[in-house]
Amino acid sequence: MSDKKVSLDDIVSLCKRRGFIYQGSEVYGGLAGTWDYGPLGLTLKRNIMNLWWKTFVDDREDMYGVDAAILMNQKVWQASGHVDTFTDPLVECSECKSRFREDQIDTAKCPTCGTADSFAEARQFNMMFKTNVGPVDDESSVSYLRPETAQGIFTNFKNVVDSFYPDLPFGIAQQGKAFRNEISPRDFVFRSREFEQMEIEYFIDPKDWEKIFETWVNDIEAFLEQLGLPKTSVHKLEVPNEDRAHYSKRTIDFEFDFPIGRKELLGLAYRTDFDLMNIQNNSGKSMDYRPKDGSPALVPHVIEPSFGVERTLMAVLTSAYTQDEVNGEERSYLKLPVHLAPVRVAVSPLLKNKPELVAKAREVYAMLKKEYGNVMWDDNGNIGKRYRRQDEIGTPYCVVVDFDSLEDDSVTVRHRDTTKQERVKLAELVARVKE
Ligand code: GAP
Image (cartoon, rainbow, N blue to C red):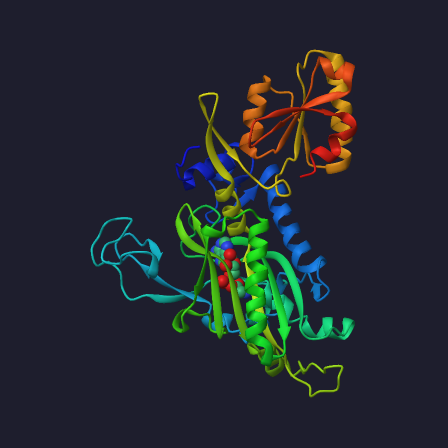
């Protein structure tokens, strides 16, 4: 096994070559900070998002899902503090007019034109994308593309309580797009202008916050393990007071050893009653929750696990990218967990110009496709090339129908990680490629 570390270039080039992720609007020269998912990237992304939803919503009794509108009343973002404080420090070179985030460069010298001392004092740049809703372009029609999915949860807190009367603690979960006009989008999908989040607002009685916060640390760690991320690559950073978001009393950033270094993967924050109180004060509507046991009404506090889909996907690809040697030849492959692999099984006839093999392989393909959905028909090139291609996209099993299959109703199953092959009876095939 080679211990060469995976580089960002390895991942970007694999993603492009094999149809995972393309640059947004590439045909017109691209649009910085935007990315398009191809067939395999989309399936991998969906597999991650579905696993998250199953783990944190479907498998629990205390979770409720919502899917709120991306465009929201501007009062949402005034009340949440985003209009005033969701900013990054922007500097502009007086010589070449290039703009940067102040904390990402050495301001002594412009990284674009090399001019020394060309930056004036930073100004605060609001990262929300502003737009107008409806035909009139004035202040009253201003809206923003949401920079976090969280506010669509808070604004539906009362609706969910009124419809379902859940006991505290309970959570509301949402997955969906978020938009930030990042000054310097960079590092592939790691810092994009359009991305997806998976967020939970977990409503609690404040007296329980410390205990529940710890439970969430454990739940998050268990989920990251399901994604196949090695424990040694995940690090918890206790975010110091001065670096925490304006609403948080405690934050742990879960960092991951990405090819670009150790960086934030997701955050876990104790948001107190900051958001519900802001909504109450600005909307005039009570956010009181009345416990069923008759104890006094309260505005619940909130623990917020906030995952970015793109960073999770990048961590999954980084962990899965493996290089080894097979028969003296270097091979790179994605050692994805079976439940995340975009293609679970590839089915091939040994030779594509033998109609009897093709017909039998088509039967096998139809049987597996009906069971698993993400099954690929692959008859391009010779068998060796097919294996290499499937290894590269992380397909755990390749099934080959050969002349013996016509006699003995068995097929060859080739395993991605070991490259070992075994004969499997068709009657046992569906179960054999389960996990
Ligand atoms: N509701 C809390 C919140 O939005 P955040 O730390 O600003 O907190 C949460 O964002 C997560 O969203 C991050 O940990 C990261 O995974 C993801 N994220 C944030 N900005 C991003 C960007 N520009 N590109 C890709 N992912 C981003």
